Length: 283
Image (cartoon, rainbow, N blue to C red; front, side, top):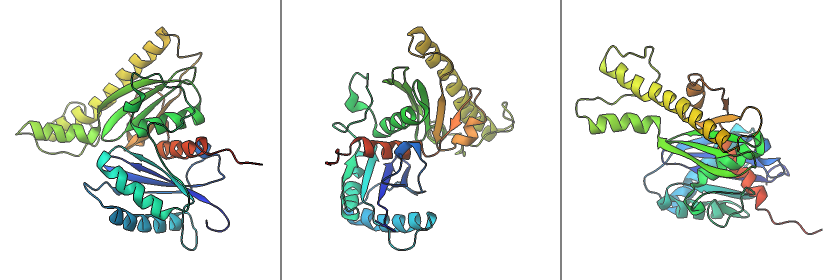
């Protein structure tokens, strides 16, 4: 608690980055953007003590970003982790940092959202957080595109049900795979080229990786929307499409569909999950 206000820390441990978001406990959860955010590179290995030390630095950065004087001690935290080996040390570190509950997104956690998936336990926690936030903020139906190590497309139908989605290699992974599998191809940064037709190998690779990703997103959206309409789960009117994650703004400018950029969508979903799983207070 700081300045009489309790704060919730949301932590999204991805394969490449770990993102942190700070929310006021009495906020409207997903309806509001985080007070502050920061990110660090995901370590290959970490102990609970090392994670605790990183959290001290993160807390200081978040407090400074939010303009808060004094030490920041969260009242609770919500953890999403897609790297199984890192979940336990980060949860232990959060438990030692927060004064209250630490929730982990996974089986048993209430989502407030019907799920139609062959095995709901298979759904990544980041995908759940994205869908929960999109449903709360943008309504149903809704489509989410999350750009990261993988490119995920999540689909919420007109009834507010999570019905599945698409998982494909992300931009950076696609670029690395090219140079790793083809001996004569160099490593390139996945930045947008100025021409579709590359004048050299690096340009040609950037065109294939970046513009190929744009074409895939547009094509997949066409097919997803067609399937939703065919199954009468798209509702009436246009379906909102939200994009988040790495390079969301840059890719949104290239994709043909109308997209809403929400850089904090996953963190907002984690905050929403905290409120969904709060025990009713006794009067």
